[in-house]
Length: 304
Image (cartoon, rainbow, N blue to C red; front, side, top):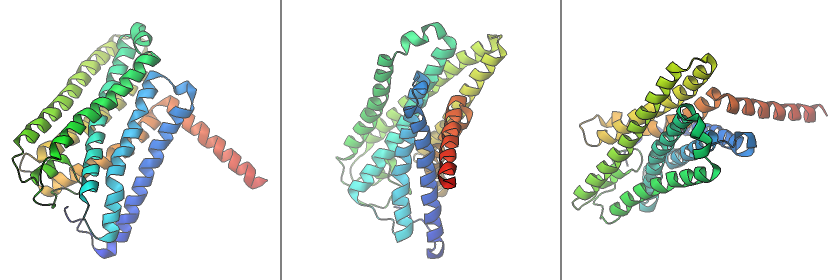
């Protein structure tokens, strides 16, 4: 694995910063997850789909930070074969899961805004369970098959091109011909990225048209605010993921490739709960109310 190039003097500060960042990610995502899970008023299709995003973000952050912090403290970038494959699997499950979840959320908003009369007929609790199960099963099937193909190779080296284990870096270490893996990996990338992009373009094109034609200013403003938030999250993740994938096939600066690769596992897990928590009125109000209640109880105990 690539050296971190952190001097021993700064290693403890870097480890502390990494630990605080990881704690922030877990805290923010658990806050959104528990707020939705524990409040029955939020058990609506939009929020029950959203709850999958913090779960997925915590998978991505957990794939990176524990080993990264250990590497900084120990000044060693070595990793066992099993741990490397597990890390790579979690990284790709996170990336694939993010695309699938954001795509399904976009389609949910399309149904709610453009097909409101059919929305509750289509998004029943039973259908919603099947949709959520389908999201995760699709992710596991596509990514799992990719790594099953990878395990048949004997690796000639363990010096990875990135700061964490991933499929493109592992494929480069294989001794045998990896054409089939490269083609299949590219097909999965095109399938997931293309499907996500086309779905989002279709849904948000219709949503924008519906909002323009809607004469109710409040409804139009709410729809644009909700969908604008979702679109920003999707575009940022789509661009960084696409660049990270293509950087292994193009002549790109190794520093730039590693920086963008790490940013995929750092910034979305931090920004997603903050963006959805702050911008979604219902979640924001529930979090503020719960925090105020806890603060009041703490003050009462202190005074007593």
